[in-house]
Length: 357
Image 1 (cartoon, rainbow, N blue to C red):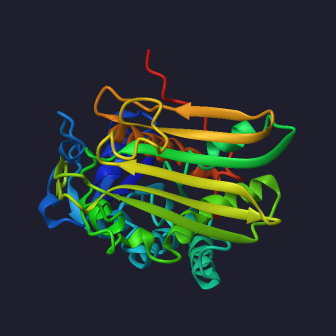
Image 2: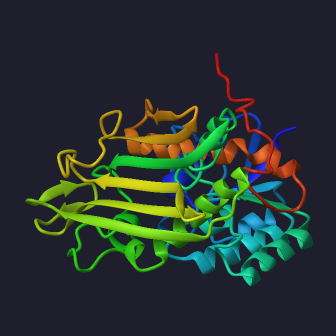
């Protein structure tokens, strides 16, 4: 019998998750919730970009999802700029007995040491009340910072450092809020995006660093942040508009987990809106963008991950990676004990049921 699933949020990630929920016979889509009034009443198939009418139309807010008596909800609403609201939504779903998988709020990927204990307790209480489970994941932080490094680490006799990297051209990324407010593209260099306010990088990727540390059996003593911004040499046209000359057009940042005074776990991002900016920074392994896992130890590894898609470019493929991980985890999250679940305690999600000859 298919798992009854509802979805909230049909932005970049939610729209791609919606495609699989419609097409994958393991799932029965029962409700779609949106925050944009312009999408209310539209069929799920149309919101997913498919030439298919499902009979499931979008409703405003969570009410239809809460009323649908689904086994699980995919939650893909914006969490970067509304973490309190996203956490509140997730708690409401859990308390109603609905298992939740999703991309937000990011902190709940591995909240211990990153989120206030009262927030963690509130989520756990809601999960106990509804006998439900929660799993939040993404690309980075997410698959690139936990699933793949853990697989490689499992083959090592000794590890000195794990470094994960995103190296990407964001010119085609059409998420205005992320590009402008969060990352600060197109802003003066002395007015960086929200991401570069003191402590924000450590909060956003501290979950990934602490989860890797927990998997390695070590404790992080300190998280250190650093970043560089590079101005556009001239006006550059991108998906969200024009990056004016002299404003931020490339960023490089690191978040480092220190263990015993040494940089044990490093998350590095190099993000450009044109490939020739800062050629001295690491270049992607494929045109447009890639991810890299570097392990220093015995053995050492350098592994490049190059997602691609027949439906879009490297940015589309990266978001698709996250959406696939979210949807394919649904059966295991439904079967899991109540509470916050992470990659460390879920069984290996293998992609069972996704093969199409």
